[in-house]
Each structure stands twice: as structure tokens, then as C-alpha cells.
Length: 535
Image (tube, rainbow, N blue to C red; front, side):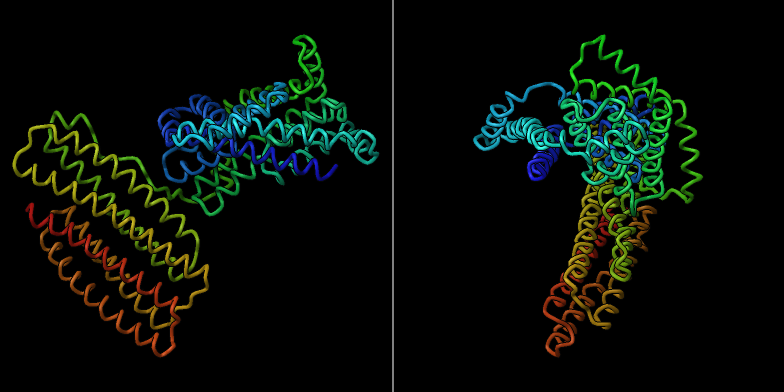
């Protein structure tokens, strides 16, 4: 019984993740764009949360994306609260899917999915195959779990538990919360509950509190996603918890009337047992959202008080790119583009500083920050390039044309600096994960080269911002020092290797770090040269 149940649960969890991954791949990067563009107010946030969760079949996935967007400054806390509420409604679709009796067709659907996965090379067809394979796996997993649960009819401890849950609703809430915390899938808890209720093993008044607790348990994913993230992200995760806890408290207090209502509705509509649970799940989340939607401002205020601190978000969105200026005043538009590229450059300096701090502290918060900075640089790279391409269609003076071309080159160099500080983080992570020890002398030398490189990039960005040749010339002088330092440090480290002070693996890490820093210096020089050439 236990093995069959666990096997069915494992297949169910795999299937829902596999199906969600396939849907997410089919949607591509559009999911984050949808969340970014259409969450202009909390009500729109609710609608978008529903749509995205239906698309990827995971409220946890939507919440994690939302927490990431809040952390990155893409989304305000009030917008995020609406999306989280919508995600809770969207996840009920899975329960309705499970309620449809397609078990007889699950195996042919799985076979079709496998054919699309293994016999077609086109990724879009493979994604459809993955969705079909996962979809069928849901029902096969449920059948296995249902078969494993049948002997529970005669197991006295389980019968006693169901009686206790009916008499003490809070026990059912705890059971639903703990189980969902363990399996990290509210859909799995609902699926099991549908099976138990369909087999007559749990009465409706015992099943409903478990259903409420399931909504609390699913918040663990958002909490995990927010650990080590920004203050704003932690506030978004806290709102998710409070929203579901308060909703559960309201419905537990109204359990008697809600149970009577569900019995009346299912009788009128003639719903089967599995659909009754799905309908109850949907009703709970829709009504809870309607009750708490007017309280979004209050929740935002409360979590700001509960989780104090200044929001240090990294803005992905452009600040200076005004498309109306392209036709009205191309010369001013070039200046605006330059300001955006300077922002990119400041992010690159920040990323190098974070990499240096990670080298010295091994604090993972620096890894998270550099990942956000690199993603922000990539986003601004795309937006700034598109802006300059649009600007190129206008009639530009000879000087503006030179600056326009130089700015496109600057974007490429700054983006490459972002790639290099990402490489540096990976090298330092490798050092930590493999317990590679660098000598005190090696660490001192790396810090010295890091400081010089950070100073050089900072000077390059300042020269770009102020169009100052003096700063650009300092960059050129510093780059000579960086090149000389790299050659000198390589020789010193070879001596340490020969003397056995540092290991071979330490030598590889050391050489790769100084090599990346030297290349960063080269990109700083490229930026400085464009300033000199366009002066």
C-alpha cells in the first residue's frame, strides 16, 4: 500500500512539474514580459496571476517569478500582491483538470506525448509532447495513489484521524499545511484529497479544512525564493503567507455554512466527488481574493512595518529612453541614450565590487546581487540597442553620428564586462565548492588587481558620462598597469606552485581570475578610446 501510494505520488509530482516545464518552454520568455507589462494595478495583477498560473500549472512558479521581479525592481509590492492573489485562483484549474475522468485515455495520451518527444526534432513539437506526457502522468499517478489508499478503509488509526478532522477543523488545517510543506505541491495535496473523498474515506467537513491548510503550505516556495533576496521580495513572500493564513481563518470560522453551501451547490449542479473538491477549492480562493482585494494597501503597509529596511532594488527598466525625442530632437535623444548606457556602466562597476566582496567574505548575497546586476545589464543592453537602432533612421549630424556609433560600441563593452564579473563569481564559487585554498599572498595580489580594475572601469564610465578626455587618458595609463600586473602575478604564482605553497587547482583559479580582470581592463580602454575619438 505504502509503496504504491509513494510511487503514485512521485509520478504525480514529476508529471505536474514536467507538464509545467513544457508549458513554460512553449511560452518562452513571454511570461516575465506579461507579468512586467500588464500588472499596472492590483486588479490587473490578479488577472495576470490567474493567466500565468494556468499557463505554467504552478502557483509556486508564478509566485517565485513575481518575487524575483519585485526583487529586481520590475514590480511594486502592491502589484505583486495582486499577482499572488491571482496565482491562488489559477492553481485551482489543476483540481478541475484532475476532476475530469480521462483515466481511460491517459495511456494513449502518454504514448502520443512520447512520440512527439522522441521522434520529432522541432522544439515546439517536443514542448507539446512534454505537456501531453506530463498531463497523462497526472492521471496515472492519481490512479496509483487511489489504489494504494483503498486499504485505508479498514485501517482504524486512519478512520480515527478522519473523525478527528471532522470534529476538530484545525487538525485538518495542520494536516493539509504539513503535507503540502513536505511535497511542495498544493496540487498533489488536492489530488490526494479528491481521491480520498471519492473513495468515501474522508467526509466533506473533514476534507475542507485540509483544503484550506493546503493553501498555507504552498507558501513555503515563495518563502524559500525570498531568502537572501531583497527586502521588497521578503515582503512579497510575507504577504503571500498572511493572505492565505487570514483566508483560512475566515473559512474555518465559517466552516458550517460553507459546508452546507457546498452540499447544496454540488447537489444542484450534480457534481461528482472529485469535482466537488475542485469546486470547493476554486470557491475558497475566489472568495478569499474578493474579500482581501480591497485590503491590498493595508497588507502593503503591514508587511512594510513587519519587515523594516530600505528597499535596495536593481532597476531593470530604462529611465532615460524617451522614444518621442527620436523624431523631435535626435541630438537630445543621443544624450538620453548615453545616460542609460552610463547606468549600465555603473551596474558593471557595482558587479565587479560585489565579485570582489564575495571573494573575501564568501557571503552568497553577493552572488544573488551580481546575478541581478548581470540580468539588468542584459536587459538595458537590449533596450538601449533597440533605441539607438530606431535613432539611426533619423538624419544625424556628423558629430552625432560618431557618438551614436561609439555608444553602440560602449554597450557591447559594458555587456562583456557583465559577462566577466559573472565568470569571476563562477570561479570563486568553484573555489569554495571544491575547497580550493589560495595563499595569503595570492589573496592579497587578487585584491590589489581587483581594486585597480574597479578603479579603471569606474574612470572609464566617468569619462563616458562627462565626455572627459583626462579621465579617458587615466584609463589608458591604468590599463598598462593592469597588463603589467597580470604578467607579474602569473610569474609569482608559478613560483608559489613550484615551491608547493599553492596547489595546481588553486593555480588554475588564480590564473583565470586575473585573466578575466585583464580582459575587463581591455573593455574599459575601449570605452575610453571612444571618448577620445568623439571629442
